[in-house]
Length: 320
Image 1 (tube, one colour):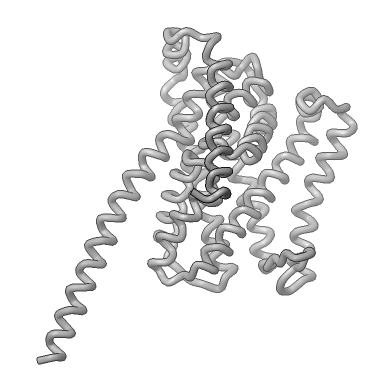
Image 2 (spheres, helix red, strand yellow; image 1 turned 60 degrees about the vertical axis):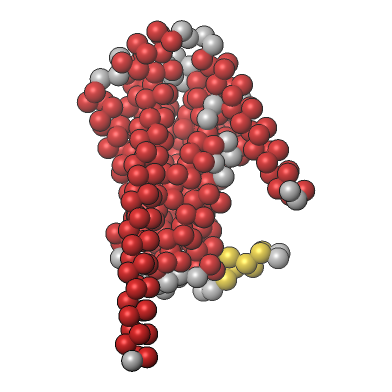
């Protein structure tokens, strides 16, 4: 094992240990009976509504890939893009290191459909930028709309939250401005970023923001069962939680999500609400994504075998 692999494996083990410790701290205050009762107290219609928000979020995530492929000047049927996106992200969200893990699945599918490794790398970068733009934009809105909670959680005065919110909202505006004025690549020191057209840049900001609003709405459905929590308070909790997940790269945000949301909304963050949210947004898509992955692999293998047999038959016919 190389030193680099040893370091990455060590960091992953450390992250999992931290996640386990955080989960222990959360669960130790509840008995199994309390956890089961808390989950059962969530009305079925509420859980179904949360599932709809989760499904809409994954639909938005497929638009990330669609916009990325359009920005490359490529063309693929949307059904193929949606399949690759959902399988990649439903598995990647739970595996951890989403950019790398989902990228590996994306390459497996897109390379079969004619895209190169460089194209897939650009798609991954494009989607990462879209995630960042969406999170920053929604975070800026949360700081302005809900300055009280943001000030309490970040331990700054309300006036500063407005300033930080405006600075956050300036980021997507600057990005769109760069896409309008700079045609081609933007060079920052040794880095080069290919800017999309203005229409695609604006769509990135819009779809990225809507995606995180939908995930926050999924979480809000669960939290609202246990208290009268405002929507933008749920948004603030999720933005903080997702920022912590991106920083730690813990698989599925295990423990980090629960700890952050419990800190942000301590009264409403019942363990049942958090488990139900994880089931709706992580576990059920994981099961569906894994099933689709297996089915698609079987279909691809059959198609590949059929193509090989046809090639052999043609070769034999030509030799005769």
